Image (cartoon, rainbow, N blue to C red; front, side, top):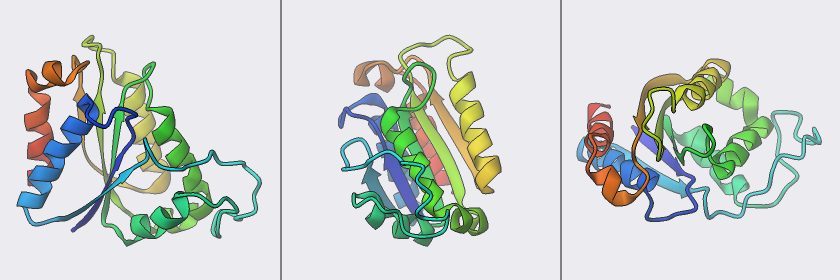
Length: 177
């Protein structure tokens, strides 16, 4: 299976990327081909809502999204990785997803598999409710098949994250595909 992992943290060595790396290790050990796109450090611009693409054409913006669109459509699975910022995804990941507008129709018919990996400082039970609901709505709208969510509560720093069950859960999710 071809898996595209979209990291979106501004912290290259942060907790969400640690979880992503564990997922990648499990997936690669299982024999899957994994490609990583770092939306947290890419040259991306927000969707202008200009309609020039007609929801199934080329976006008029010239940035790193033009190269990744083909990789998404060539993949069997996409994995969204983000730190939790004010109970939602990072602005970098949101901007990336908003740019799906230019190839919405292709995504809807592709029926990609998907997963969500999130790291949050907070460890309260309700911490991940909204980001999980947003992801589930996105899957429903784009007809993605959810393969799992790693909702890492209490993962504020790398050392905190390493002391939780979430790195192992991320690894096991990758290994289970």
